[in-house]
Length: 412
Image (cartoon, rainbow, N blue to C red; front, top):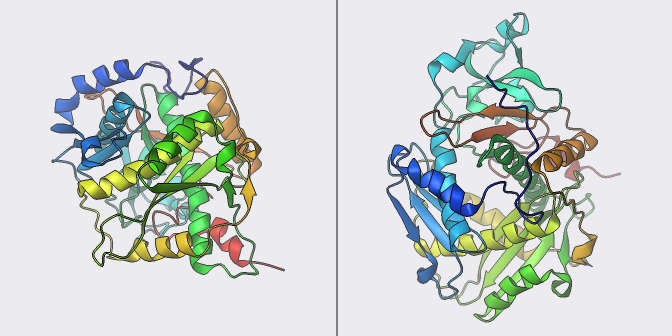
């Protein structure tokens, strides 16, 4: 049986994308198994908005958490596939066959001949966790990607929603699907790097002191953006919408952008407030990361217009809105930089992208990169969860801070 973590050469369709198959092939594949998810409806949301930029929704009414999945992209096909693939990854991560799990405490595994277990405490667990080293929990098989060593990962750090109390809230950070396993791994790695960068910006916006060391944050000069991005910004400006692009690339050195879309005319309860919608993107190639951030900000706005992002994972009202207002209106940077100053890596093979990402993480002191294969045999579309001990999960759970955020409170 072939080792799913032994990646063969994976040539990209084009250096400007991170896919190894065409969108048309990917769509045929996901439509063939849509009834098994089940995806009951795929809707074009673009007509709801005067922009008419591509945003789609896929509905999975029987899902245990998120039931409405949004997708964005440069065109209708990519947005439609994006929505359906999100549905695949979220439903695939809901469970794993019991025969593929192990029930034990971390203390018991430390002294056994089982594969090495990674201590859940390394993942900045929240203060309401039920985890302790001597409490039995469920484990799933994983692989440490740098060394190639088999490893056990707590099921609550792989599956969603969590069931053992290691985590108490839904966390989909590092969950990704793809046409191949390596494609899913690269997508997942980019997401955890992106969320880590965003977490540091948000934490500093909430708690950082003026004399403290801020995370990297600079605004990109719009005149220096590539034509692919300027086209989107011009389309927005034609409808009185303003988008600012911020470089939040962290010390890891993988291009990460935060796009902030401002709509002064968006209808609000008091008829006065100016609303902002944000999106983020990370990729080895800076232009790919940039377009992800832009399209996600557009998706965020259309999602509000659509009014349906139904999930069983309920968050206290106002919990995220307060920080969003603070960080967007008070702490936006005044520094400007050209797009060309953002680090960028271009390759023709996803295996090179993976090597680049692993090297950048190692250079920033991340010793382990752990992946778990959550692909459902009855679906057959690769889904993985990637966890990197040390990267901050603060963006998805404010009870999980960690050193990557806390260092922004320290100064001489």
